[in-house]
Length: 300
Image (cartoon, rainbow, N blue to C red):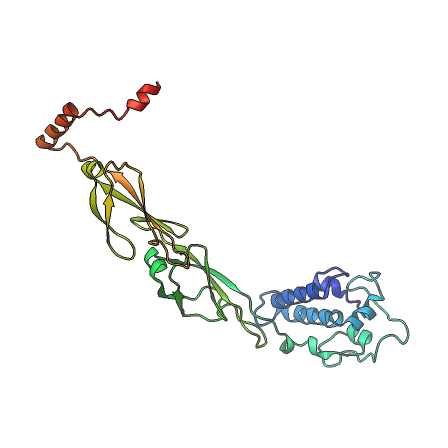
């Protein structure tokens, strides 16, 4: 009969731990399971993997098997010592090889048949893009199930208010289906927040560039400012400068400690596109003692 190197079959070393042995078995069993595998000779490979795990998962069987050490190679002709092992049933119920049954007497028939393989499904990761408004208010979205999910079709997803980019929504049992009736994996949806026309998002804080006129900057005044929770009136201080930030506390993304909204003032210069506008600029140039480069000129 042929010698079976069960460690080689499972792709593990002879000192593999029981935990890593189980992981290796599940990985190989998934790879060769006849219901899903596209590998050549998947059925035979699957049974071989099951037999190897059956031999090594039990400490007593493994100790008995390890007495041969590493002196034999997989597939090498092998004749056990007289009286070794069990009954020499030579095939039993068809689940195990002659080598296994001569080694262990046909014991432990449960691990070799495909109907006895159980493995939990794998988790599936995907991305979902939502608007800034949906991230702020929360929303219910209908999405197409990602590739690899246990089923096809659509899913209803609840996006919680205040979620930020990179956070994940877990949908229990919506990942890859398990085998042998085992539970499916989970689906993890990583959130990406789409760029907005007016707002910029930095963590939980929202930034808005607010155009103001030169006279609003110079004299101050009240202006209407949009926020994701609605419009508010904002007082511009006299002498405001372009790039100056004004903080609206708690107007960012909601959470236990909500973010803020920062209004960034941008002074916009009216165009000199009429005679009257040109005259006003000429009058300011003549009457206002204003040199925006005074500090720079002093430094040169």
